[in-house]
Amino acid sequence: MQIIKPLFIFLLAITFVSCGTAEKQEANATPEATEEAKVEEVRSYTVNTENSQVQWKGSILSVKDHEGTINFESGKFTTQGEKLMEGTFVVDMSTMVATDENYQPEEGKTKEQLIGHLSSPDFFDVAKFPKAILTVVGGNATLTVRGHAKGVELSNVTMSPNGDNVNATAEFTFNRQDFGVAFDMGVKDMAISDEIVAKVSIDGVKS
Image (cartoon, rainbow, N blue to C red; front, top):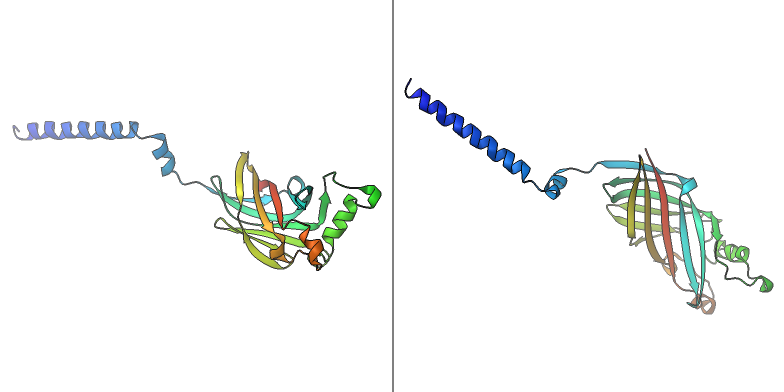
């Protein structure tokens, strides 16, 4: 009995020391470490086409800009935290409209004339290629226009939670020459900037 009693006291002391150490370590854990330990949930969304669009901007001789919008036909994407993981976004090219005011109606240069020109075989050939598609896999984006697919770099990507939904934005710039969007006549084509800027605004509905 004399041997057992000191041994019991010794084991009890070790237990209290261990518990105190564990509690102290837990208390000293930083918020950053706690957050890193969490695994962000992967969420799937469907694009609400009524509240989503693409804004486009092109330039003529770098002195006159034309701007407008195009609507989405469909889209699905997944996120993890604030990261866009993958997605497929389909744009209806027939919904393209101009929103700027850089026109001369008295010379026949109107918004309707511009859209008709951009929709023609000289540019996007909407009758033959009615859709443009942006796909994202593992953070890498590919744009398909007029049957040509080429990688583009997304910038200013944001994910703003809105209840079960998410508001997402992104921007990219593409060279129209890479997609066969060009005049056959070189002189006229040289007057138009090769770069087209696209700003994407999406309302994602949790699916």
